[in-house]
Amino acid sequence: MDKKHGMGTIGAMAALVIIAGLWHLQDVRAGAAATGDLWLTGWYLVLWVLVLCAAIVLGWLFLRQTAGRQWRLEKIYPAAGLGLGLLYLFVLPPMSAPDEISHYITAYELSSRMLGLPPQAENGRVLVRLQDWFLEDVRGDYVWEPDGAYWKRAAEVGKTDKTAADSDPVVLGGRLDESTYRAIYHTVVRGIDTPQEQAARSAGLPDTAMAESAYDTVNTTPAAYLPQTVGMILARLFRLDSVWLAYLGRFTNLLFFVAMTWLAMRRLPFGKEVLFGVALLPMTLHLSASFSYDVMILACMFLFTAVCLDLAYTGKQVRVRDVALLTVLMAAAGPCKMIYAPMMGLCLLIPVKKFGGWRNWLASAVLVGGAWVAAMALVNADVVSSYAAVEEAVHPVSKEAGFSLKLLLHQPLLTAQMFYNTFLHQLDEFHMTMIGSQLGNLDPVLNVPYFLVVFYSAGLVALALRVPGEQLVITGGRRLWIFAVCAVCSMAALLSMLIAWTPRSSAVIEGVQGRYFLPFLPVFLMACKNDRFVLTKNGNRSILYMMCCANLYVVLRLFSVVCLRV
Image (cartoon, rainbow, N blue to C red; front, side, top):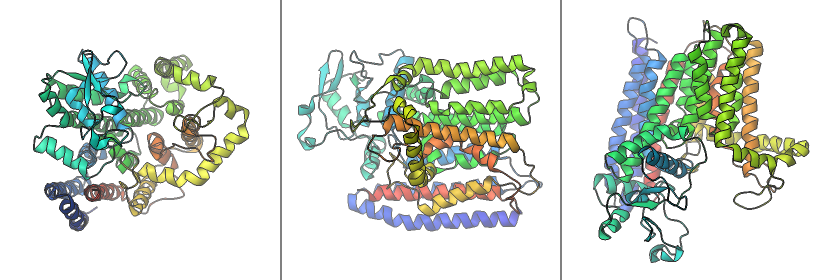
């Protein structure tokens, strides 16, 4: 792209950001006027300036030329991934991601263990700092009572009168609305004590007082929460308040995701633009800036894919460190969601001769596969055995009869019918939620507009097409094998939710979310590249830049939507 055209594109995107900012400024002002929180306008203006700067800087990185050369995509990604991730982290604050409160409390328990502090009370409840109850109970709806050395929530009758009709306290960001921003503003900017801090001070409790959390941990490998835990440990060592603790935990998780995706992009022999595009999807960015263990899954599967493709197509020999890396990646991500075990099939793309013979190939296969089996046995053995042994499954919420593995094996036509109905009626939902049509806790209000879902989808398709002069790499049987691996992962995702989350009365499989398809989406798109559909011009950098700018619009719009949600 020539310099003049590049500057024109940057100018056009900056102009669109200015127009979008002016448009949504009216919504922010309306929300501020309705609540009296006039500082919301100031926050929005700061966000608007940051978004405009990001549009200019990212355009310069993507489209600039020096001596006829452009920066490699792997050099641009850290700035794009970290910058956009921070914007999503700000606009969609702590506990607003899917199941984030459970991921947060799991990371909290691990941080206590690593600090040498008591992680749990005698009843098994996770212990948190008394002030950190604010994240679970923003309004201070529940009264406390001592329970031995720790504090716990009082019984139902102990709730304050103002919330006597409520069944649960308000989690910060659980239902993201203007009050969430207000709570963060009062705590972080104005320094107003939280209800928990006020009560602790009036009771004369020390800063080291601990209390029982009301939320359960996620039963998975502790490795999935190491990045988040680093930030939480720093916050606890420096005695930062609960909001900063949550933000630091999210930030270190984002750093880990960006670093791992950058390593994957560097290792990929081709298809860097496809991985970049998947990493720019709103759902990917939202997850990357949260406490979710999806960060570990996505990061490990991206790097696992890159290593396998590098060894299969460009590496001269498989080294011991390559096998060790694949082993660690599968052991770390496997117990989080066993449905990605078929991704080990990508290792079969690597020719046996690169291992130095069948003996070394077999030893490597045993190490990688054995790591997954060992991790599963240590973490998920009870879950797997319960699925295999249960005779009559029960839905965990409605208590209706569910689908057991034995039932599905004995009635294959029923299984096929459920899969068929699901693809027939929910494929559009899988596609839209994979892009980000429902952000937050699967909140339809916090959405990416449909026209942007179409734009992101078209962008991914364009990135997956061959450009002039590009050599077609994945062909023939290898392409079919990759498609088979992705198909088995998809079937495993559906089967897991059919057994775990679908009542017998349902005609489709419930609980499947589009984000489950993100870990293998890059390799699927890479395998779609063919000789039949070829772009007439290489516009990948412009596409990626416009996908970045679309995210800039998304964060402006999301902020205004939250401000209006009073």
